[in-house]
Structure formats: C-alpha cells, structure tokens
Length: 117
Figure 1 (cartoon, rainbow, N blue to C red):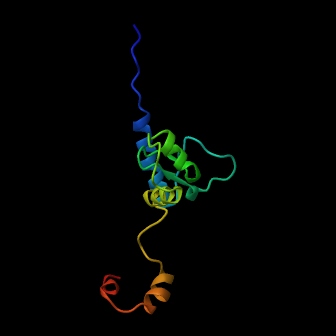
Figure 2 (cartoon, one colour; figure 1 turned 90 degrees about the vertical axis):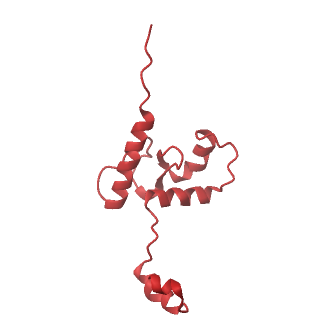
Figure 3 (cartoon, helix red, strand yellow; figure 1 turned 180 degrees about the vertical axis):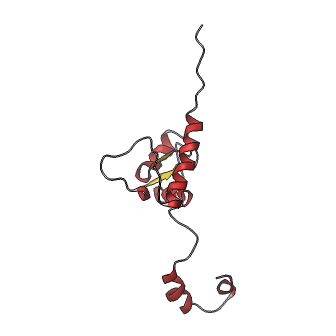
C-alpha cells in the first residue's frame, strides 16, 4: 500500500510570489521563476498569475489562464491581463512621478484632486 505524498507546489508558489514581490520592490535579491528564457533576465517582463500566483512571462499569461486556470473563454484581453499582473507585481505603482507633478498637474485646473497631491 503506497501512501500518496502531499503536494506542496501551491505552498511553494506562494513563497516564490512573496519573494519575487520583495525583489521587485527592493530591486535586489534572487528572482525565482519556474521557467526562464536563456540570456539576460529582465524582471519587468515577468508577473504573477492573479489566480495561482505563479510568476511567468507576461507574453504567455493569457494562454496560461486559458489552459491552467480553467478559464476557457476569458473575456479579458491579453493587454488587460498583463496590466493586472504588472500592478500585482509592483511594476506599476499609483504614485505620480515628479515629471507628471511638475508638467501635467500644473496645467490642470484646480479641483479637489490637486488638494490630495
């Protein structure tokens, strides 16, 4: 009688997700990915699947969601999936840059949004 070993892959993926978010935020550390292209690593090309938290190339995210996450007909476009993954990864933040504050916001009319900035 053989005992089935527990599957820890979901647990490992969550640990990798936490580590990778920390690497992106601090801009130092070891980036963990299950599959990597050969050559130089560009962390900005990677992001997490928002269902399984598995990090992968953003170019393959739509296919991953269709095949692995059980969403056969995703209504989301590839572009919106990539944007969501980049926000989750921390590549895109909600803070405005100095250039935007100095150039764009000055030309806008004064309203309640200006008071928040």
